[in-house]
Image (cartoon, rainbow, N blue to C red; front, side, top):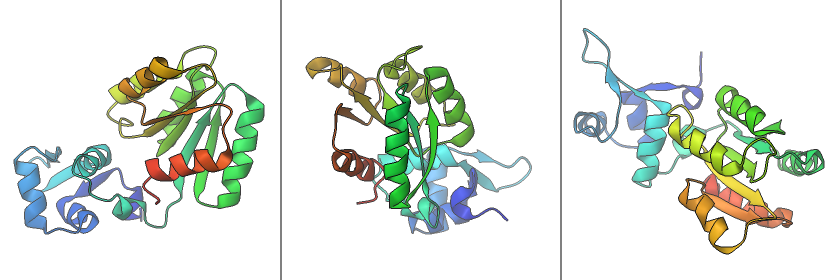
Amino acid sequence: MVAMWDKEVFTTGEVAKICNVTIRTVIKWFESNDLVGYKIPGSKDRRIPRENLIAFMRRYNIPLRGLAEDRKKRVLIADDDRNLTEILKEDLDELGLFELRLAHSGYEAGMVTMDFKPDLILLDYNLGDVTGLEVTQLIRQNPAVAGTRIIIMSGLLKGKKSRDVLEAGADDFIAKPFEFDALKERMFKALELV
């Protein structure tokens, strides 16, 4: 049996439990097309895909705790600097809060994102084969992973250029070199762990 927080599609009853509202409220959200889902053919049963539910909850500032119970947050570290990815992996492993994957190119980051479906990507701006900006735009265009939080990391971007990555869809930006505690604070904020 799949735990509720690992499901990819939810019933209206499950959504009600996650959002701490009545089923009738969820049906109203659904019928007004505010919460996007679909009806089972030949039935009144409704289903809401996970990514649509997450987008809805974020839009209305509904805490995501109901989707995160007893599951470590999935984090992808995508950087062509293998030393940095290994150091970050070790530091984050020590916290015991995350399930981690590594990628060392834009192509690999895209493949791992589709398979792993991370909650958060720590994404280097210059991945060699593509920029973090391009990866961010591709992720935001794909409904299966569009709700993934993205923190761009770069030692090259300053001022307006760092704002450009936020306008392109990244959730945050941190300049390299950075202190681990500063990165951890931003990660906790992005994942609503604070």
